[in-house]
Length: 112
Image: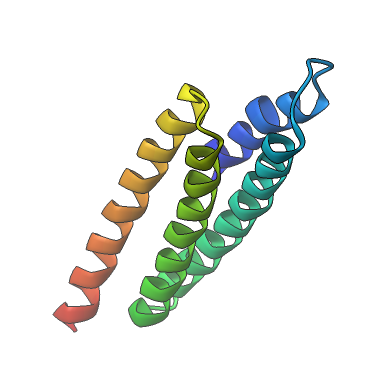
């Protein structure tokens, strides 16, 4: 969650605040990514609480939601057809974390 907050602050917010020219579609895309990444953080916080409460089914749903939020940003960035290595790298990392969490939560759910 902290790395996602850092990405929003250090990449997305800086690009939105930059004086460099940016087309309206890409600007809207960055705003969308910021919003859905914040939603992903909220979903991961919920999932963390769900795991503490041993509610693995709900945790699975919340982690799945965060993965969907990541996909929303990825789709937007891909549609811009611009090379965005920072977003691509972050997307790979975040999805790997989400997949790992889903795997662990599923194992716990089916263990019980």
